[in-house]
Image (cartoon, rainbow, N blue to C red; front, side):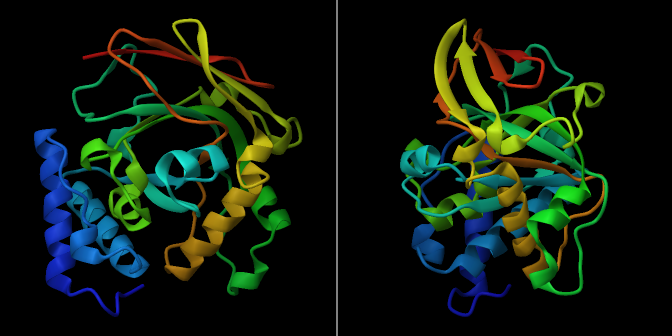
Amino acid sequence: MTSQTTPAASVSAAVDRLATASETRVPCPAVRDLIGTDDLPAAYAVQQGLVRRRLAGGATVVGRKIGATSKAVQDQLGVDQPDFGYLLSDMDVSADDPISMRTLLQPRVEAEVAFVLAADIAPEHEDEITLDLVRTAVGLALPALEIVDSRIAGWDITFTDTVADNASSGLYVVGPRSDGLPLSDIEPRDVDMSLTINGDERSSGNGAACLGDPLEALRWLAVQAHRFGDPLRAGHLILSGALGPFVPFAPGDRVTASISGFAPLTVSFEE
């Protein structure tokens, strides 16, 4: 996907701005002054530039995340459609407890259903990417916590800003693969979710809040990946999107996601 309107120099400047904010942990101004608010190819070009820098630093791509899938999160972000970003190996803090917040700027946490793909979703034609096809590609479903973050000061973002910023990604936690469930044992659209911080419920929702069905979110992602020429592959981890509003947290907090059908997923955070 190539931008037809935004100069390459502006895309490069946006990459530099966001990368510097990440490296220094100092939030930056939005990048829409460089790429506009309507040039989606330019926004994804910035995202790709940031991902390439991370790969050059030794990270690897392990999957994708889908953002802004629920109406609640769209309202929080001021956007009206989903987007996607890349999951990189250095974003996985599933084995850490407590989780260090040293790389984060303005984090929020949300609970969602994750999928581990057992097969590629790479048919020849886009119209072959059906709900049945993506369902058969899923090996396991897992509970997940995504720690979303923004390099942009005050979360002052438009849609192109969040896309450019790798869909406002930060870190993620998934439950043990040994606790994962095949789709024969769980229906993602029917799950209920409660997220607590230090025992107090701060967010709630259900599977239907995620584009009507987390598997529909996965189908949407597979279509986008096909259009980008970078299809979803076996082994990829997919964070399908929030089941309720995201919420802020602080060092010392203990966060638990309870998603029906799965064991609760609990993490704590430290500065």
